[in-house]
Amino acid sequence: MISTSLKAPQQVMLLPPRWIPSPVEWQNYVEIFRMAPFGRYFLNSVLVTTLSTLGELLTTILAAYAFSRLEFRGRDLLFALLLGTMMVPGEVLLVPNYITLARLGWIDHYEALIIPWTASVFAIFLLRQHFLSVPKEVLYAARVDGAGDFRILWQVMVPMVKPALVTILILKAIGSWNAFLWPLIVTNTREMRTLPVGLTAFTTEAGTVYQLYMAAAAFIIVPMVILFLLLQRQIVEGLSRAGIKG
Image (tube, rainbow, N blue to C red; front, side, top):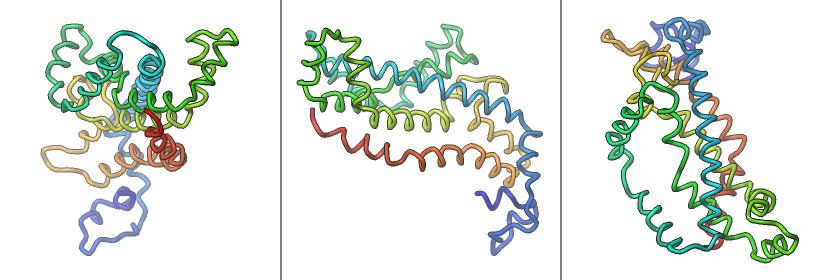
């Protein structure tokens, strides 16, 4: 991908392929911003990824604490039903979700790109398992010191499950950054599109401009690859500890 993104048009289809471009066409990365408003796409992706990730972290923390440490009637049944929704393919929900957002007037607005993705059943399950691994003695000690549920959650529980929170954050950020189908459906104008949807600008009736397509794809993929490599230890630790208790 990186090699093709730096090639001249006549080098893209050479057989055998030339792995090291000569000359190196850095101009391809400038050209993608000329052919499409990639700056706007980038800002949209950053905004949507940031807000939806923060929203998911908040809802996940609150829901996971409720399902792990609060006692209320029907808690386990409700959690089982929540887990059952993971067996429903996301594609099945596209049409009803679209109709709902259309009636709310959110189509081609940031609300449609952000709000539907501020909750995740998998994230709730993962964090609940980590909350269950926190010794009850720690919670009893906090209550003896006069802490209520709010303080216990934010000052005791959350600091003890940081690896899980990092895992949820990274998985959500990568998923939101790379999302294609939903942003394609709920956006109608170029001003609201995100980076993955913006790749369509390099595919026309005449064909695909491969060197520009690869340059745009690299612009999308490389930041997430770097982020994953920097935090892969925390991701593995967060996932591996999910089955300790519960």
